[in-house]
Image (cartoon, rainbow, N blue to C red; front, side, top):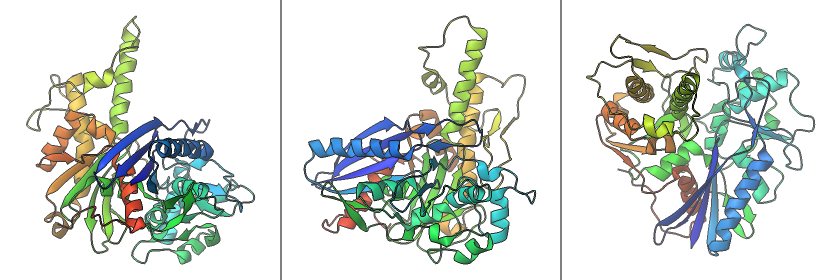
Length: 447
């Protein structure tokens, strides 16, 4: 008896097939080649139908080899939106979480995102679905015939089960913005203040509800990828600190009760409770940026081709240096922060003897860790004192032993990983198992 989980990432799409009886798992990852080029530097868009095609291919491939699949769970990139008509067809691209249109200046002199936040009292950063929609609505970019706004994961679920109306769970709804996390509902009064039509929002449902069947297999509600990665990584719910590094990065802990903490996002957790999340816009992307810099430098000063040089391998093979070393201090805010999008990274403590490629690599990795640790330090002492297990996920972390060392040094504890690859896809799989209600399987312990 197998369950399948799918993770629709920004740059790749992953799937897992898992059997709870033997706890064996098979995973597959393929590139997400649905990107749509744009002349607008702030626009980030993807083709939703291409994403759907990739997801169907992964599921169909698993179905050929595992004929006893009992459920399908979906997760993926949060915050982004697309528009669908009354037939449930996509009539726009997917505007991803990286889309920067809401950081453009509004007529008040503030950005669209800042205006939304000031008027409604909610923090609605650029890339959040309703910030994107607010910009589109003010610039006549909402397509004609729109019936609903939805996330890419809710769109895929809807299409897999051949329905016409998207439904979202609380974790994805909160990722759109203007959502009352404590009451688990959209802030309709706040939406009215800024002239957003609430009827365009998807209906809400619990994460473990089945929306229908794909080729006879139940398909469950999609959940946010941050929550899914937590589910698929930790074994101890209340004592774990979860750090994940992909394109972006997050540090997350579970809280049974609602909390409002400056600088920290409080997100609904599937099955009840909340996640307290510190989200950085540059995680693995910062390391990728440094790799590109080195590659361009070598190409600039060499007559030989850089093809065949494994820059990542070289960069992750340097000798690690602890905090007692005199290193450049790198602040990795290269894309700003959610609350200060215009802020930028910087490098300090450069001297005549420490400005070397090796030290810059180590300094940048420490900067990635430092940003997440600062989020963690913003949590109340009552929360932090219960946390003792540091759990990591994300390929940008797993494939970089130096970054692992930096996290262990920063948090002063050992970093462990889930025994399974593709933790977010596995977390979606676990959500499907929970929804099936036909297996007595405990996913995570409460201690």
